[in-house]
Length: 180
Figure 1: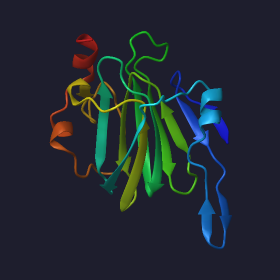
Figure 2 (figure 1 turned 90 degrees about the horizontal axis):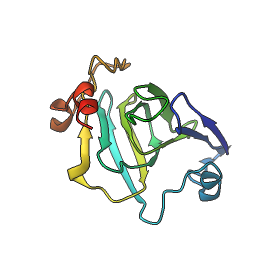
Figure 3 (figure 1 turned 180 degrees about the vertical axis):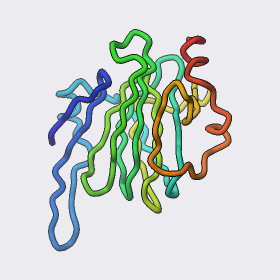
Figure 4 (figure 1 turned 120 degrees about the vertical axis):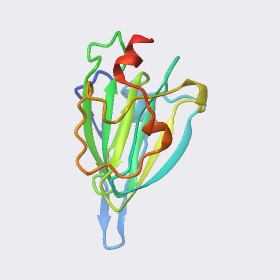
């Protein structure tokens, strides 16, 4: 498995090697030893979750107050445009937006360190996204920034499909950074 760095400090792209044959394919989706070699340890309280989204759906931009959360994100079915924003005020890449295409063909998965905002848009009819998060969910620590916040300038490739009430009423980037 190859591990690549990105334009945001601490973000890693894990590039596994799918093994294809006439039955389909097999791929290792996570390897603790390789992750640890690159400073990624999700700890003993890791939780796995999965979401399913229809084409055009945007989920995000989400983060957490306090200690934040680290996660590994991958697509089990379909494809998404995955978007990260560095919200760590002490980071050399603070405010940087980075995008990644994640799909069920390349099987890349993304390590998102604590302190980043995360979101995605489903590019295919159905997209199943799997998350391995380093600590239990704490709803009281959730933060959300509008997916169309002009200060972030995120370009979504498809017309915006369904979004949740939480995302429809999300705050602004400016408000998030002013109230840290």
